[in-house]
Length: 173
Image 1 (cartoon, one colour):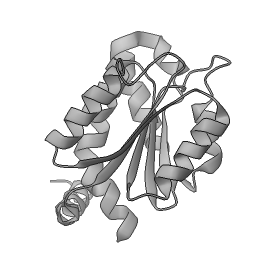
Image 2: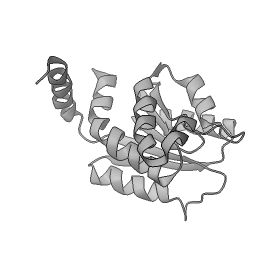
Image 3: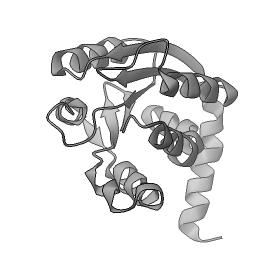
Image 4: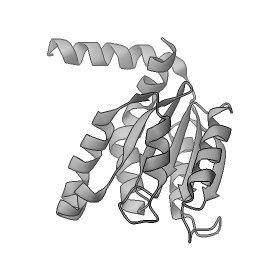
């Protein structure tokens, strides 16, 4: 095993002691409702199946004040991770990234880079239109993905779930 792989494996091993991670989910959309929010249904199931706890959920319009207020509310809650989905594109209505990027105290540029790399296999060069991002705000991991169900599933299965314990542990070590 390469030396740097050993270190990452050790960190994951230590992180297992973190146990259940409390997570909040925020869907940013002008059209989704609690009845048709397929991303929420998917994440609720995936979060609990992975042994973590969903401690908050909100649907907000892609309005900067609503995104900001929801970030503040969940960052002040028991949530140690907030998963935003939607509003990461470049249209005039896509403002989630703009709000979150101003707030992040530490960024995780690798998240967006790897997400776009993986997305390329699904959507081709359109992956470059995504402003998926991640970072830390008020001792809480913030992750923001596009709102398409395929993007949410890709982010959870390939990036978030495999590192969730490690992410939470890094905040408290």
